[in-house]
Amino acid sequence: MVRFPGVYVAIITPFHDNLELNLQGLKEHVDWLIQEGADGIVPTGSVGEYASLTAAERASVVETVIDVANGRVPVVVGSAAPSTKIAAEWIAHAKQAGAAGVMALPPINYRPSEAEVIAHYERLSEEGLPIIAYNNPHDYSTDLKPALLHKLSAIENVVAVKEFSGDIRRVHDIQRETDLEILVGVDDLAMEGGLLGATGWIAGLTNAIPGDSVRMFKLAQQGKMEEALALYRRMLPLFHWDASPRLVQAIKYTMELAGRPVGITRPPRLELTLEEKREIRDAYEYAIAK
Image 1 (cartoon, rainbow, N blue to C red):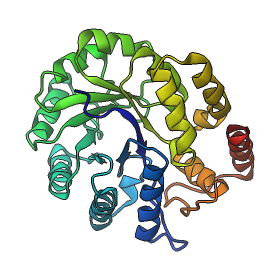
Image 2 (image 1 turned 180 degrees about the horizontal axis):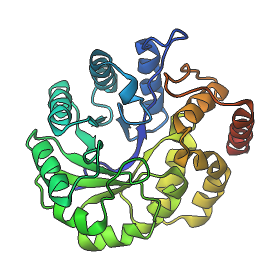
Image 3 (image 1 turned 135 degrees about the horizontal axis):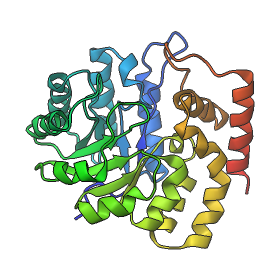
Image 4 (image 1 turned 135 degrees about the vertical axis):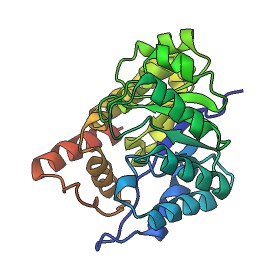
């Protein structure tokens, strides 16, 4: 049985104009995504600005999302932290709050050895929640290559991988070398991943265009290439922002364009330039053109 099938939205964290946490906006956003067909919600990831939240705010975001989802869709909580101990504590909190699983990075503060990566996930597994190992070698020092994922898949609660390397060929290698579920982690490889047999997609720009995103991925999984491609090509210029360092700002600005403003990002992230806004606006208008 696939634990995390379909499109899981790595959600933004809304802020008021004074940059205080906007829990009402968060509730409305989660409810809207579920109504639009999202298969799951992933709070407190990089898109959710987890590193800009206080511990109390982060806990509140997790609890609010799980409360609003209310069992309608699974909630998978981002557990990134500067140490294994703190990451395990966030997983324990997620479990107590009712999360269905966690998305867990390898150690993030330095370049760990393979043995340290394995020990890290073994400790996180002890908390008893299903783990989606998050491979993001662009922003962090560790690359969870298929050979390492083969070893991690032997850990009891490591059941899936979010693949963000950008190398779509790895889907084949991971399928061959492990029994892990594969969730595409790059928006502009979502269709390709679905066609190759990825079981899910943890999506970013889908915060702003959930309906068409979900439809496209399901068509790709069903092998309906022509129909999936028609949707995908429209959204692709916007999806290219998923690999940009300005991703979070791009998502929040796109949501403003979609009529669902959620505030700006907290420092150190700065606002978009006028040129960036123009490019995103053009991409969004192209994505929603019928």
